[in-house]
Amino acid sequence: MKQPKKGIKWETLGFGFSDVNCHIRFTWKDGKWSGPKFVKDPYINMHIGAACLHYGQECFEGIKAFRQKSGKIVIFRPDENARRMYRTAERTCMPPVPVKMFLDACKAVVKRNAEYVPPYGTGGSMYLRPLLIGTGPQIGVAPAKEYTFMIMVMPVGAYYKGGMKPVRAVIFDDWDRAAPHGMGDVKVGGNYAASLFAHEKAKHDGWPVELYLDAKSHKFVEEFATSNFAGISRSGAYVTPDSKSILPSVTNMTLRQCAEDLGIKVERRPVPYSEIKRFKAVAALGTAVVITPVWEITRGKDVIRISDPDVVHPTLQKLYDTVQGIQYGTIKDVHKWCLEVK
Ligand SMILES: Cc1ncc(COP(=O)(O)O)c(C=O)c1O
Image (cartoon, rainbow, N blue to C red; front, side, top):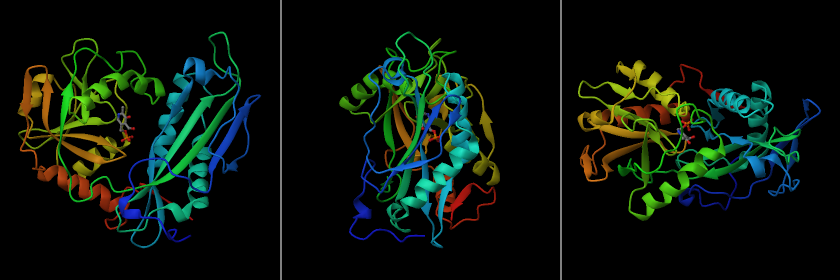
């Protein structure tokens, strides 16, 4: 496998687009998927009437690949993302990408760009962004007749340059993200369009993340705009909401298993807003950062202080270290979550 490219400042990389060798691309037409193409050009030429542009027929995923201590390159749980994208495609009337084709594509595109997987020890990783879009022209509202599936990749830096840093969160009662029988449980771009306005307001007012309550009653915790929610209860349990309108996060699934392996009780159930003040710790969970501790949550005049701003609960720290250890190959991967790129 190729060694990391010389001349890149891996330690200062952020989370953003950068040019690599290529992305991988497939097209679906007349009921079948084409073979792969490796494309250097990051621009897509498509019909002005493409269904993804007009009716939002699109979905995506987010995955990470790691260069491990041994030198191996692995992709973390891409099978779960493949299955999630399959469900999203079905929900949005797009042809699902078969799981094997998805996994082979992930491996192939990482391999072609192996020199962009950051070196072990820098805390960096390669971010994979699979994207499925309706590219056939469609003027009346209906599913497209042609689709494009792509995976772009880019090196990204360590999120925490030194230790986990707790953040403040906000709840707005004026905007919801996902309706009870809507599309909150699948990964479509429209969900993010729905959250942008609140997100920009939160950022402007000094909160890096916003938390959503259930759209129907505003009584139960759902999830953050781009990550799941977990709290550590007074008895030490890992508590995470059970709801049909939140995204089934691969990170949350991983952390629940790690918690169980560490002998921590896991509770997946409705979480009332009123319970937040009793948690000893709260965290946002997702692929990009794994765990972001949240030390304070504001809802109008209600300000819930969960912990001191610079204190990370030991359970969150332990879970974070465990997941990162498995990803970077310093802790045994007993559940076989890492898919090696050979
Ligand atoms: C709305 C939402 N919830 C949760 C997550 C976390 O999911 P995962 O752990 O699979 O990255 C994400 C990120 O993809 C997200 O966008």
